[in-house]
Image 1: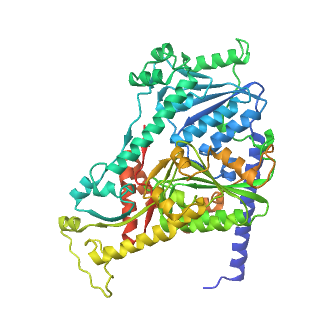
Image 2: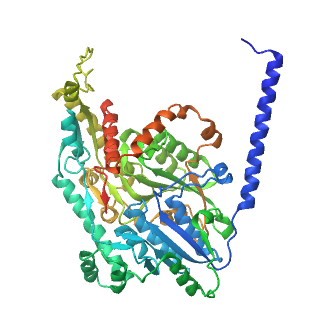
Image 3: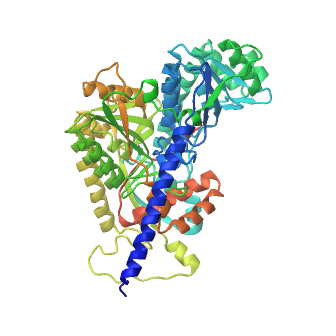
Length: 597
């Protein structure tokens, strides 16, 4: 029924009032933000919490920030605080409060480099850790001083890598994984469903990774603590240690409580004994803009974050699937950066184990188009493997850390066969088909020899006609040479550089420096970083949209999964991946979720 004229006027008035109110809220929030921006006192200590999940990138939410809602700290933002503090004359020292950060060894290496860069400005760094395992201590060794409280522990007792297999569980459920692997020795992702222990290829790769990591770890400690590598290895073999023992062995500088560390900083910075140490937290210091300290004042360089498992559609996050980077989101970001003439270069920050081969190729194409307009440089984080390497391979330059996990050029396809589960549940089913291969994705029957041959043909086409040639083109090698390096084999950054799969070592800062050089920008002038993808507009996040229709169901799922152990959640993620493959989707995914403790 059509609204009367008076009703339309009333609706218009109400809408106008709401708009005015919203504008008023925005204005008040912005004024409040400007008034509440922190001031940094002279001779202050920046206290950085190196803890939490530390995702590679968290899009900025200006409106939420204006309302005082604390933003999640990202790894990239943590590095930015060190960059600012180096040139900020009001900051005299940094205290790192290290508490089990959720980062891998590639980012741990990158953080150590950022600490070293900060120290090059002549300012001290102290590290405090209540419990120090391998990674926490590795980060701390980049500091000038290391402190552990008297009741703490130093748990530097060697490296261990875990591999999990779910075939036993699937057997009990009556589920069988029917898979095809391109690179059967090293493309081991399906082994989680088809085996109960490591194969020779997986064991060979993990051994090589542990050797690389352990070598770099012991060398770093030896250099930082003025010891021989042999002495460090002996110390590790006899760990763990109490703080008193660690101090006597020269692994830490003292066993101090947190307030006593403040006293040590006061003495280092020349404070009078009766004066209180002036500190500013990392959360507050994030509100100090980079341009206010003389950074971010040059030409624009785009930084596009490709963080998480790769899938088609839009990017998302959750406990079940973790961070998912969507091809639609990244293609739009790359296209936007490419067509913006004020942006002189593009840096892709890739931190992904791979995923959908289709989504990887769609992103590859957008990157190839962008490269025709301006330089494209890749910065690899903890992992840039399989599909993560696919999207990186055609960049002008690829930068990785020595401990980055990369390569894994290969793919697999498969489907779950649930006939045994159906029998156990008392479920029966029948298929009525037209067409010779109409039943190729039946979930109760393994592939026939003819169907398997067809799927192998599809997989070979993706690997030999697309993945390998595109890597060969990007790395200026022959397809034969790339195939010899591929076969699903995982490499460390060091090995990848030796094999020509990456160009140089370093983190995001190194990649930006290379991008400046390729774009012929002044080396001695900072650049203004334009970060992609942008955050969800606040109106959409508040009032919802098409992506929020299943929000309640998703919230219930998240609450259930949050109560489960981490390893169980990981099993669910891989089960979800197997379910995605049932419609024939090829997966360019790292062969296992490698966790080195």
